[in-house]
Length: 262
Image 1 (spheres, rainbow, N blue to C red):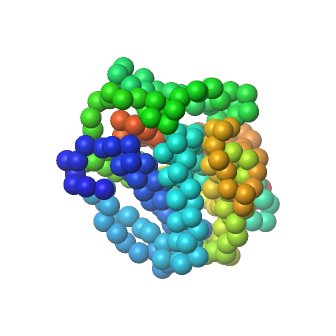
Image 2: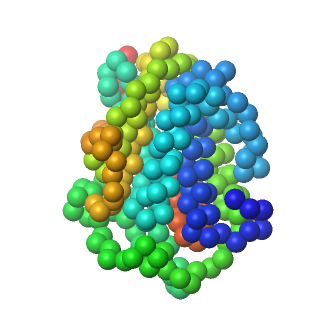
């Protein structure tokens, strides 16, 4: 969008959140070795050097996902994005990178909270009878692009600091029930140095799960999914950012190292 001092509109907020998701997904794929490091290029973003895939298949797929994400964000239908890392051989979920989305209400700055991840989405989604404009309120505290980018920078730094890795891949696409998914696979074992995440000791793949409101319009090609929870998991909360229209809260849950089969 515009310069760093630009006041953010709803359209601008949607663009910022979508761009953050794209950057965060790429960072996780690189750091967790789902793709070989040579398939990424360096770019300047958020005052940082970030890594973005050059794989044409992945870029095309993520472009489709982000286009749909922008539509849902504009309609206020996105609850969360989850990046699931799982073992190819075991099919077991090893990590869940979760980005919860809430809509900031008007005057008082309160948020329309969405249901907790550990509760059933079918019974805890608050019913909202707002029109598209009313969902986002009309009066809110102004925030500049630079202020938001500074907050996003802190989250990207946390993702980068959590782990470093190398790996390889293959890919296929599926869709899920209010949680929509794509699956990519690593074709080689991964060696990782970590800050707090345990080693990935087997080839890994990833899924993207998108949780939406019940009334969201869902393309036919998307498939329903289970939430891919982790038993006996550890949780680390990351930083959050807000655009004055959307707030994104970040966290990662992972399987404890002593739970791995040796």
